[in-house]
Length: 248
Image (cartoon, rainbow, N blue to C red; front, side, top):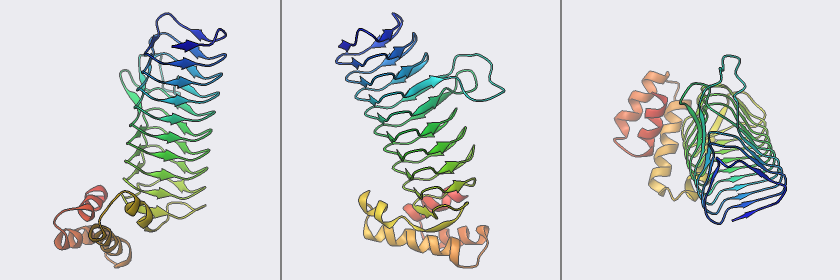
């Protein structure tokens, strides 16, 4: 363990083995820093925050501050960061707003500079947030989704697995799995995230099934109820049904 002399680490903090803490960091009590974590200069880890092993927190990040919610009353709520996450400079992650609730990230997430997770946000595994992404309260993001720079997501919205949200998009409606949104627009889905599906190892047959389901949902002229019924009639399992279930 290596702690810079200028860092302030409360005696009530739990630090694992091989943790490094940079200059002028503040780590409060009731925190837990997993094995092998690296905390950069001027980072602040506030109480009720836990980091899984192998995380990297860069300069000026603030994890576990109180939620920006006028209804919040001081209570014990949490931030839980999964293993092997990279949290770049200036990132802010706020605690849950209700007693016992949490803001959580899965393993292997990459949060680029100045991105923000509001209270009760939940990220799946290997989610990437580019610079300046803003996720409002209770947003849920599926595994391996990519949200591009300066996109903003409204509270309570769900972003499905392997979605690509384009830069500067405004999202106030749920985005189904495997889709791509239009850049600098509001709630506009334009295509299937074929590159992301291929990189994730999805088979050619499953990628085609997603394309077919996408066409039925968005381009057939059917209403949502009719489109979902047709997808279920044509596909019995796999990612097309995952997309259907998400919309339903």
